[in-house]
Length: 445
Ligand SMILES: [Zn+2]
Image (cartoon, rainbow, N blue to C red; front, side):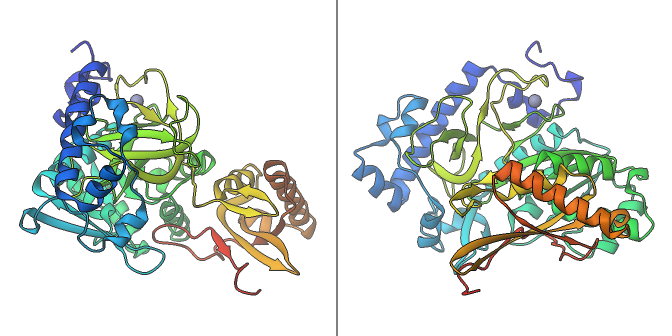
Protein backbone atom coordinates (compact mmCIF):
# COMPACT_ATOMS: atom_id res chain seq x y z
CA UNK A 1 0.00 0.00 0.00
CA UNK A 2 3.04 2.30 -0.02
CA UNK A 3 1.91 3.96 -3.27
CA UNK A 4 -1.25 5.15 -1.61
CA UNK A 5 -0.95 8.23 0.51
CA UNK A 6 -4.45 9.66 0.50
CA UNK A 7 -5.91 10.58 3.89
CA UNK A 8 -7.01 7.08 4.67
CA UNK A 9 -6.00 4.30 2.29
CA UNK A 10 -8.68 2.02 3.67
CA UNK A 11 -11.33 4.43 2.42
CA UNK A 12 -10.23 4.37 -1.21
CA UNK A 13 -13.03 3.17 -3.43
CA UNK A 14 -12.00 0.02 -5.36
CA UNK A 15 -12.69 1.85 -8.65
CA UNK A 16 -10.06 4.46 -7.71
CA UNK A 17 -7.17 2.00 -7.37
CA UNK A 18 -5.75 2.82 -10.87
CA UNK A 19 -5.46 6.47 -9.72
CA UNK A 20 -2.43 5.37 -7.67
CA UNK A 21 -0.83 2.97 -10.18
CA UNK A 22 2.95 3.14 -10.60
CA UNK A 23 3.81 5.31 -13.57
CA UNK A 24 5.78 2.65 -15.47
CA UNK A 25 2.94 0.18 -15.10
CA UNK A 26 0.48 2.82 -16.30
CA UNK A 27 2.57 3.55 -19.42
CA UNK A 28 2.64 -0.16 -20.32
CA UNK A 29 -1.10 -0.43 -19.85
CA UNK A 30 -1.63 2.67 -21.99
CA UNK A 31 0.54 1.33 -24.79
CA UNK A 32 -1.30 -2.00 -24.89
CA UNK A 33 -4.64 -0.25 -24.94
CA UNK A 34 -3.52 2.30 -27.52
CA UNK A 35 -2.40 -0.46 -29.86
CA UNK A 36 -5.68 -2.32 -29.64
CA UNK A 37 -7.68 0.92 -30.02
CA UNK A 38 -5.78 1.85 -33.18
CA UNK A 39 -6.24 -1.66 -34.57
CA UNK A 40 -9.95 -1.53 -33.85
CA UNK A 41 -10.33 1.93 -35.42
CA UNK A 42 -8.37 0.91 -38.51
CA UNK A 43 -10.29 -2.30 -39.04
CA UNK A 44 -13.80 -1.01 -38.43
CA UNK A 45 -13.96 2.70 -39.25
CA UNK A 46 -13.50 3.77 -42.83
CA UNK A 47 -12.54 7.35 -41.99
CA UNK A 48 -9.61 6.23 -39.80
CA UNK A 49 -8.47 3.62 -42.33
CA UNK A 50 -8.46 6.12 -45.18
CA UNK A 51 -6.58 8.76 -43.17
CA UNK A 52 -4.01 6.33 -41.84
CA UNK A 53 -3.46 4.91 -45.32
CA UNK A 54 -2.97 8.42 -46.62
CA UNK A 55 -0.34 9.03 -43.91
CA UNK A 56 1.23 5.63 -44.52
CA UNK A 57 0.64 4.48 -40.95
CA UNK A 58 -0.41 0.96 -40.05
CA UNK A 59 -1.65 -0.14 -36.59
CA UNK A 60 1.56 -2.16 -36.11
CA UNK A 61 3.62 1.04 -36.53
CA UNK A 62 2.50 2.09 -33.03
CA UNK A 63 5.38 0.68 -30.98
CA UNK A 64 5.63 3.31 -28.26
CA UNK A 65 3.35 5.94 -26.76
CA UNK A 66 5.27 8.64 -28.62
CA UNK A 67 4.17 7.05 -31.88
CA UNK A 68 0.71 8.44 -31.19
CA UNK A 69 1.91 11.58 -33.00
CA UNK A 70 1.99 9.59 -36.28
CA UNK A 71 -1.78 9.21 -36.12
CA UNK A 72 -4.17 11.62 -37.85
CA UNK A 73 -6.21 14.11 -35.80
CA UNK A 74 -9.99 13.85 -35.49
CA UNK A 75 -12.10 17.03 -35.27
CA UNK A 76 -15.69 17.83 -34.44
CA UNK A 77 -16.58 18.25 -38.11
CA UNK A 78 -15.67 14.58 -38.64
CA UNK A 79 -18.43 13.59 -36.23
CA UNK A 80 -20.87 15.91 -37.95
CA UNK A 81 -19.93 14.67 -41.42
CA UNK A 82 -20.35 11.03 -40.42
CA UNK A 83 -23.77 11.66 -38.86
CA UNK A 84 -25.34 9.58 -37.50
CA UNK A 85 -23.46 6.25 -37.27
CA UNK A 86 -20.44 6.63 -39.56
CA UNK A 87 -17.73 6.43 -36.87
CA UNK A 88 -19.06 3.37 -35.06
CA UNK A 89 -16.57 0.54 -34.65
CA UNK A 90 -19.14 -1.89 -33.23
CA UNK A 91 -22.20 -3.39 -34.91
CA UNK A 92 -25.46 -1.77 -33.83
CA UNK A 93 -26.55 -4.91 -31.93
CA UNK A 94 -23.63 -4.39 -29.51
CA UNK A 95 -24.50 -0.74 -28.89
CA UNK A 96 -26.67 -0.24 -25.83
CA UNK A 97 -26.81 3.56 -25.57
CA UNK A 98 -26.70 6.61 -27.83
CA UNK A 99 -26.20 10.20 -26.75
CA UNK A 100 -26.12 13.32 -28.87
CA UNK A 101 -24.95 16.85 -28.36
CA UNK A 102 -26.50 19.79 -30.07
CA UNK A 103 -24.18 21.61 -32.40
CA UNK A 104 -24.48 25.34 -32.90
CA UNK A 105 -25.36 24.68 -36.53
CA UNK A 106 -27.42 21.96 -38.17
CA UNK A 107 -27.08 18.31 -37.18
CA UNK A 108 -26.05 17.17 -33.72
CA UNK A 109 -23.16 14.81 -33.15
CA UNK A 110 -23.99 11.27 -32.07
CA UNK A 111 -21.93 9.14 -29.68
CA UNK A 112 -22.36 5.44 -28.90
CA UNK A 113 -21.59 3.05 -26.04
CA UNK A 114 -21.38 -0.72 -25.71
CA UNK A 115 -22.03 -2.29 -22.31
CA UNK A 116 -18.25 -2.29 -21.76
CA UNK A 117 -18.08 1.44 -22.60
CA UNK A 118 -20.81 2.22 -20.07
CA UNK A 119 -18.92 0.29 -17.38
CA UNK A 120 -15.74 2.23 -18.13
CA UNK A 121 -17.65 5.53 -18.08
CA UNK A 122 -19.36 4.71 -14.78
CA UNK A 123 -16.02 3.73 -13.24
CA UNK A 124 -14.48 7.02 -14.40
CA UNK A 125 -17.35 8.93 -12.80
CA UNK A 126 -16.98 6.98 -9.54
CA UNK A 127 -13.32 8.02 -9.51
CA UNK A 128 -14.34 11.61 -10.27
CA UNK A 129 -16.76 11.77 -7.36
CA UNK A 130 -14.33 10.00 -5.04
CA UNK A 131 -11.62 12.53 -6.00
CA UNK A 132 -14.09 15.30 -5.05
CA UNK A 133 -14.29 13.75 -1.59
CA UNK A 134 -17.67 12.07 -1.99
CA UNK A 135 -18.64 8.57 -0.96
CA UNK A 136 -21.19 6.31 0.62
CA UNK A 137 -23.40 8.40 2.92
CA UNK A 138 -23.45 11.47 0.67
CA UNK A 139 -26.74 12.67 -0.80
CA UNK A 140 -26.02 13.91 -4.30
CA UNK A 141 -28.44 16.22 -6.10
CA UNK A 142 -27.84 15.70 -9.79
CA UNK A 143 -28.95 18.90 -11.51
CA UNK A 144 -27.25 18.15 -14.83
CA UNK A 145 -29.83 17.74 -17.58
CA UNK A 146 -30.98 14.15 -18.16
CA UNK A 147 -31.51 13.09 -21.75
CA UNK A 148 -29.33 13.13 -24.82
CA UNK A 149 -26.76 15.35 -23.01
CA UNK A 150 -24.16 13.10 -21.34
CA UNK A 151 -23.97 15.12 -18.10
CA UNK A 152 -27.12 13.79 -16.43
CA UNK A 153 -26.79 10.04 -16.89
CA UNK A 154 -23.00 10.15 -16.58
CA UNK A 155 -23.14 11.71 -13.10
CA UNK A 156 -26.17 9.60 -12.17
CA UNK A 157 -24.63 6.17 -12.71
CA UNK A 158 -21.31 7.28 -11.25
CA UNK A 159 -22.92 8.54 -8.05
CA UNK A 160 -25.01 5.36 -7.68
CA UNK A 161 -22.02 3.08 -8.24
CA UNK A 162 -20.10 5.15 -5.68
CA UNK A 163 -22.72 4.08 -3.15
CA UNK A 164 -24.08 7.58 -2.60
CA UNK A 165 -27.78 8.44 -2.53
CA UNK A 166 -28.75 10.09 -5.82
CA UNK A 167 -31.50 12.66 -6.26
CA UNK A 168 -32.10 12.64 -10.06
CA UNK A 169 -33.73 16.06 -10.21
CA UNK A 170 -32.21 17.08 -13.61
CA UNK A 171 -31.92 20.76 -14.60
CA UNK A 172 -34.42 23.56 -14.13
CA UNK A 173 -37.24 24.28 -11.67
CA UNK A 174 -34.96 26.19 -9.34
CA UNK A 175 -37.46 26.63 -6.49
CA UNK A 176 -37.94 22.88 -6.29
CA UNK A 177 -34.15 22.36 -6.39
CA UNK A 178 -33.80 24.56 -3.31
CA UNK A 179 -36.65 22.85 -1.48
CA UNK A 180 -35.15 19.41 -2.17
CA UNK A 181 -31.65 20.56 -1.20
CA UNK A 182 -32.97 21.77 2.15
CA UNK A 183 -35.52 19.05 2.95
CA UNK A 184 -33.40 16.06 1.88
CA UNK A 185 -30.23 17.31 3.57
CA UNK A 186 -28.32 17.22 0.27
CA UNK A 187 -24.52 17.17 0.79
CA UNK A 188 -23.35 17.59 -2.83
CA UNK A 189 -24.65 19.02 -6.08
CA UNK A 190 -23.69 18.38 -9.71
CA UNK A 191 -24.47 21.15 -12.22
CA UNK A 192 -22.83 23.89 -14.27
CA UNK A 193 -21.15 26.60 -12.16
CA UNK A 194 -23.41 29.28 -13.63
CA UNK A 195 -26.53 27.34 -12.74
CA UNK A 196 -25.28 27.04 -9.16
CA UNK A 197 -24.84 30.84 -9.05
CA UNK A 198 -28.43 31.22 -10.14
CA UNK A 199 -29.48 28.75 -7.47
CA UNK A 200 -27.63 30.76 -4.80
CA UNK A 201 -29.37 33.98 -5.86
CA UNK A 202 -32.79 32.37 -5.86
CA UNK A 203 -32.16 30.77 -2.46
CA UNK A 204 -31.36 34.19 -1.02
CA UNK A 205 -34.62 35.56 -2.42
CA UNK A 206 -36.48 32.65 -0.84
CA UNK A 207 -34.83 33.37 2.51
CA UNK A 208 -32.66 30.23 2.43
CA UNK A 209 -29.00 30.58 3.39
CA UNK A 210 -27.25 27.78 1.50
CA UNK A 211 -24.20 28.18 3.76
CA UNK A 212 -26.28 26.88 6.66
CA UNK A 213 -27.41 23.73 4.83
CA UNK A 214 -25.51 20.40 4.93
CA UNK A 215 -24.36 21.05 1.32
CA UNK A 216 -20.55 20.81 1.34
CA UNK A 217 -19.41 19.93 -2.21
CA UNK A 218 -20.15 21.13 -5.74
CA UNK A 219 -19.10 19.01 -8.73
CA UNK A 220 -19.04 21.57 -11.51
CA UNK A 221 -18.34 21.13 -15.19
CA UNK A 222 -19.60 21.47 -18.77
CA UNK A 223 -18.33 25.06 -19.18
CA UNK A 224 -15.09 26.94 -18.56
CA UNK A 225 -15.04 28.97 -15.33
CA UNK A 226 -12.38 31.08 -13.70
CA UNK A 227 -10.75 30.82 -10.27
CA UNK A 228 -12.37 34.14 -9.33
CA UNK A 229 -15.75 32.58 -9.98
CA UNK A 230 -14.73 29.59 -7.88
CA UNK A 231 -13.92 31.84 -4.90
CA UNK A 232 -17.27 33.57 -5.29
CA UNK A 233 -19.11 30.22 -5.35
CA UNK A 234 -17.19 28.77 -2.41
CA UNK A 235 -17.81 31.80 -0.23
CA UNK A 236 -21.42 32.28 -1.26
CA UNK A 237 -22.36 28.61 -0.94
CA UNK A 238 -20.11 27.61 1.97
CA UNK A 239 -18.89 24.65 -0.11
CA UNK A 240 -15.80 23.25 -1.82
CA UNK A 241 -16.26 23.74 -5.56
CA UNK A 242 -14.49 21.14 -7.70
CA UNK A 243 -13.89 21.33 -11.41
CA UNK A 244 -14.45 18.22 -13.50
CA UNK A 245 -13.68 17.69 -17.16
CA UNK A 246 -15.21 15.71 -19.96
CA UNK A 247 -16.82 15.86 -23.36
CA UNK A 248 -19.34 13.67 -25.14
CA UNK A 249 -16.98 12.91 -28.01
CA UNK A 250 -14.61 11.19 -25.58
CA UNK A 251 -17.12 9.68 -23.13
CA UNK A 252 -19.01 12.50 -21.37
CA UNK A 253 -18.03 13.79 -17.91
CA UNK A 254 -15.34 11.62 -16.32
CA UNK A 255 -12.27 12.34 -18.47
CA UNK A 256 -10.56 14.18 -15.63
CA UNK A 257 -11.22 15.65 -12.22
CA UNK A 258 -9.73 17.81 -9.52
CA UNK A 259 -8.85 16.17 -6.23
CA UNK A 260 -8.98 17.67 -2.73
CA UNK A 261 -5.82 19.68 -3.54
CA UNK A 262 -7.68 21.66 -6.24
CA UNK A 263 -4.42 22.07 -8.11
CA UNK A 264 -5.18 20.89 -11.60
CA UNK A 265 -7.28 18.07 -13.02
CA UNK A 266 -6.08 14.48 -12.94
CA UNK A 267 -6.74 12.70 -16.23
CA UNK A 268 -7.95 9.10 -15.91
CA UNK A 269 -5.02 8.02 -18.03
CA UNK A 270 -5.79 4.32 -18.16
CA UNK A 271 -8.76 5.23 -20.38
CA UNK A 272 -7.76 8.53 -21.98
CA UNK A 273 -4.41 9.50 -23.47
CA UNK A 274 -3.84 13.27 -23.31
CA UNK A 275 -1.53 15.43 -25.45
CA UNK A 276 -1.05 19.21 -25.53
CA UNK A 277 -0.32 20.58 -28.99
CA UNK A 278 0.27 23.90 -30.66
CA UNK A 279 -3.12 24.56 -32.29
CA UNK A 280 -1.45 26.17 -35.31
CA UNK A 281 1.31 23.68 -36.13
CA UNK A 282 -0.26 20.55 -34.61
CA UNK A 283 3.08 19.74 -32.94
CA UNK A 284 3.37 18.85 -29.23
CA UNK A 285 4.38 21.82 -27.06
CA UNK A 286 7.17 21.55 -24.44
CA UNK A 287 6.01 20.17 -21.08
CA UNK A 288 4.19 22.81 -19.04
CA UNK A 289 3.44 25.13 -21.95
CA UNK A 290 -0.10 26.02 -22.94
CA UNK A 291 -1.74 24.53 -25.97
CA UNK A 292 -4.77 22.64 -27.20
CA UNK A 293 -5.74 19.46 -25.36
CA UNK A 294 -5.96 16.42 -27.64
CA UNK A 295 -7.38 13.15 -26.31
CA UNK A 296 -7.21 9.58 -27.62
CA UNK A 297 -9.57 7.05 -26.05
CA UNK A 298 -7.84 3.88 -24.85
CA UNK A 299 -10.77 1.72 -23.80
CA UNK A 300 -13.70 2.68 -26.00
CA UNK A 301 -15.21 -0.02 -28.20
CA UNK A 302 -18.27 1.52 -29.88
CA UNK A 303 -16.62 4.74 -30.93
CA UNK A 304 -12.87 4.98 -30.47
CA UNK A 305 -11.46 8.49 -30.91
CA UNK A 306 -7.97 8.97 -32.26
CA UNK A 307 -6.31 12.26 -31.31
CA UNK A 308 -9.51 14.21 -30.87
CA UNK A 309 -8.93 17.97 -30.89
CA UNK A 310 -10.95 19.32 -27.98
CA UNK A 311 -10.35 23.05 -28.70
CA UNK A 312 -9.82 23.40 -24.93
CA UNK A 313 -6.67 25.26 -23.94
CA UNK A 314 -4.65 23.74 -21.10
CA UNK A 315 -1.14 22.66 -20.08
CA UNK A 316 0.42 19.73 -18.28
CA UNK A 317 1.34 20.31 -14.64
CA UNK A 318 4.53 18.50 -13.75
CA UNK A 319 5.46 16.98 -10.41
CA UNK A 320 3.52 14.79 -8.03
CA UNK A 321 0.22 15.84 -6.48
CA UNK A 322 -0.08 15.94 -2.70
CA UNK A 323 -3.16 13.70 -2.87
CA UNK A 324 -0.96 10.73 -3.84
CA UNK A 325 -2.56 10.08 -7.23
CA UNK A 326 0.04 9.30 -9.87
CA UNK A 327 -2.21 10.39 -12.75
CA UNK A 328 -0.95 13.29 -14.83
CA UNK A 329 -2.58 16.64 -14.22
CA UNK A 330 -3.64 19.38 -16.59
CA UNK A 331 -4.40 23.01 -15.78
CA UNK A 332 -8.04 23.98 -15.40
CA UNK A 333 -9.60 24.92 -18.70
CA UNK A 334 -10.57 28.56 -18.59
CA UNK A 335 -10.87 29.05 -22.30
CA UNK A 336 -11.50 27.27 -25.57
CA UNK A 337 -9.65 28.15 -28.72
CA UNK A 338 -12.98 28.74 -30.47
CA UNK A 339 -14.21 31.02 -27.62
CA UNK A 340 -11.66 33.58 -28.60
CA UNK A 341 -12.81 36.65 -30.44
CA UNK A 342 -10.72 39.31 -32.08
CA UNK A 343 -11.58 42.93 -31.55
CA UNK A 344 -9.53 45.74 -33.07
CA UNK A 345 -6.76 43.24 -33.65
CA UNK A 346 -6.62 42.06 -30.03
CA UNK A 347 -7.31 38.42 -29.07
CA UNK A 348 -9.82 38.27 -26.22
CA UNK A 349 -11.20 35.34 -24.21
CA UNK A 350 -14.43 35.74 -22.19
CA UNK A 351 -12.60 34.31 -19.15
CA UNK A 352 -10.19 37.29 -19.18
CA UNK A 353 -13.17 39.63 -19.05
CA UNK A 354 -14.63 37.58 -16.18
CA UNK A 355 -11.43 37.81 -14.12
CA UNK A 356 -11.09 41.56 -14.75
CA UNK A 357 -14.68 42.19 -13.66
CA UNK A 358 -14.53 40.05 -10.53
CA UNK A 359 -11.29 41.70 -9.47
CA UNK A 360 -13.31 44.84 -8.68
CA UNK A 361 -15.47 44.87 -5.58
CA UNK A 362 -19.17 45.55 -6.08
CA UNK A 363 -19.72 43.39 -9.16
CA UNK A 364 -21.58 40.09 -9.43
CA UNK A 365 -20.44 37.20 -11.65
CA UNK A 366 -23.26 37.81 -14.11
CA UNK A 367 -22.10 39.53 -17.24
CA UNK A 368 -22.47 39.61 -20.98
CA UNK A 369 -20.12 40.79 -23.70
CA UNK A 370 -21.74 42.48 -26.68
CA UNK A 371 -19.82 43.11 -29.87
CA UNK A 372 -21.11 45.50 -32.51
CA UNK A 373 -19.67 47.33 -35.50
CA UNK A 374 -20.19 51.02 -35.95
CA UNK A 375 -18.88 52.78 -39.03
CA UNK A 376 -16.56 49.83 -39.75
CA UNK A 377 -15.13 49.90 -36.20
CA UNK A 378 -15.57 47.07 -33.72
CA UNK A 379 -17.12 48.09 -30.41
CA UNK A 380 -17.15 46.04 -27.24
CA UNK A 381 -19.63 46.64 -24.49
CA UNK A 382 -19.77 44.71 -21.23
CA UNK A 383 -22.96 44.48 -19.24
CA UNK A 384 -22.35 43.51 -15.65
CA UNK A 385 -24.63 43.19 -12.67
CA UNK A 386 -23.67 45.02 -9.49
CA UNK A 387 -24.47 44.17 -5.89
CA UNK A 388 -27.74 45.54 -4.44
CA UNK A 389 -25.72 47.69 -2.01
CA UNK A 390 -23.85 49.44 -4.82
CA UNK A 391 -26.92 49.75 -7.00
CA UNK A 392 -28.97 51.54 -4.34
CA UNK A 393 -26.04 53.85 -3.61
CA UNK A 394 -25.60 57.37 -4.91
CA UNK A 395 -24.90 58.04 -8.58
CA UNK A 396 -21.31 58.93 -7.68
CA UNK A 397 -20.61 55.40 -6.43
CA UNK A 398 -21.89 53.85 -9.65
CA UNK A 399 -19.78 56.17 -11.77
CA UNK A 400 -16.78 55.38 -9.66
CA UNK A 401 -17.34 51.65 -10.10
CA UNK A 402 -17.81 52.08 -13.83
CA UNK A 403 -14.44 53.81 -14.08
CA UNK A 404 -12.71 51.15 -11.99
CA UNK A 405 -14.12 48.40 -14.21
CA UNK A 406 -13.10 50.16 -17.40
CA UNK A 407 -9.60 50.52 -15.96
CA UNK A 408 -9.41 46.89 -14.85
CA UNK A 409 -10.47 45.74 -18.33
CA UNK A 410 -8.01 48.12 -19.95
CA UNK A 411 -5.19 46.69 -17.84
CA UNK A 412 -6.15 43.11 -18.70
CA UNK A 413 -6.98 43.48 -22.39
CA UNK A 414 -5.31 46.70 -23.46
CA UNK A 415 -8.63 47.85 -24.88
CA UNK A 416 -11.11 50.59 -24.06
CA UNK A 417 -14.41 48.92 -23.30
CA UNK A 418 -17.85 50.44 -22.68
CA UNK A 419 -19.28 49.32 -19.34
CA UNK A 420 -22.94 49.22 -18.55
CA UNK A 421 -23.90 48.52 -14.93
CA UNK A 422 -27.04 46.46 -14.56
CA UNK A 423 -29.33 46.04 -11.55
CA UNK A 424 -29.07 42.68 -9.78
CA UNK A 425 -31.07 39.85 -11.39
CA UNK A 426 -31.58 41.68 -14.69
CA UNK A 427 -29.44 39.54 -16.97
CA UNK A 428 -31.10 36.37 -18.26
CA UNK A 429 -30.09 33.27 -16.28
CA UNK A 430 -29.15 29.97 -17.84
CA UNK A 431 -30.08 26.49 -16.65
CA UNK A 432 -27.14 25.03 -18.50
CA UNK A 433 -24.19 26.69 -20.14
CA UNK A 434 -24.22 30.47 -19.88
CA UNK A 435 -24.20 32.64 -23.00
CA UNK A 436 -21.45 35.17 -22.30
CA UNK A 437 -20.86 36.53 -25.76
CA UNK A 438 -23.26 38.15 -28.21
CA UNK A 439 -21.57 38.99 -31.47
CA UNK A 440 -23.69 41.29 -33.60
CA UNK A 441 -20.88 42.41 -35.87
CA UNK A 442 -22.07 40.46 -38.89
CA UNK A 443 -25.70 41.38 -38.56
CA UNK A 444 -25.31 44.81 -40.10
CA UNK A 445 -25.73 46.55 -36.72
ZN1 LIG B 1 -4.34 15.19 -6.70
